[in-house]
Length: 318
Image 1 (tube, one colour):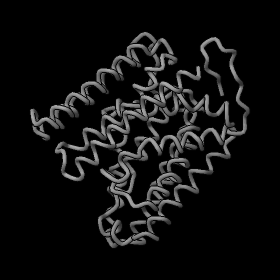
Image 2 (cartoon, rainbow, N blue to C red):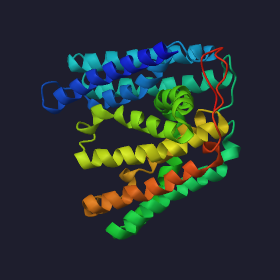
Image 3 (spheres, helix red, strand yellow):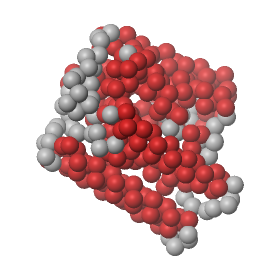
């Protein structure tokens, strides 16, 4: 089983290093391509890495092949864009179309494939927590709008973002699954078995954020102190998504939380608020969510001990 994680680590680290080099070459004008194609491809890498380990559930074989195809398609389009065979605009359209088609294919495979699962299994059990999670994000954004802007009407954009999140969960299913399939579905339980329920989540959050390193100083254009904040919010968010997964054992629940979080990010704030917040405001804005999200670590699911399954498939249960 340890070899499986080595394969996963080598593949994801090598692929991210390649993407990092490409993004920096694009940033400094050495290469020219649409960097968002790399951003989309990066979302698929974890699922491909998990599939390559051959330790995932056999029932997901078709889904694994789907991610091989999506990753290959994105890489091919990226190469054609770099070589100038495709314009960046056309390359972006093709990559986006592939991910959208892949998302609907993923939904069909999950609900009507061999496993015949239900996307909404377990949602009823965490409906209160999803509402609480959404209210935390909404409250954080309302604070930012009223404290740093006069554009109070912008609160409506937060409500619109929630509607968009519902659509993103399905239209962007392949991207969200690409991450959640690996972080929650592949790594969470083994890490919790090794380090404990809470510390396993902390380790997972650190791994998850470190995985984003090619984006920090390129697409995201972050300062060093902002990278530190990202580690804090990612670990705190991992407690929320980790709880969703433990409570339901359904990968779609952390996908839902992931989509809501992305939709309710700082991008929905008015420009005036984003500018006026500055460093101090950004730290306060982030820590509000960090503190609230971290309270999920007090849930009883995090107080239970992990029960290691007999190594029939090499995977324990929590």
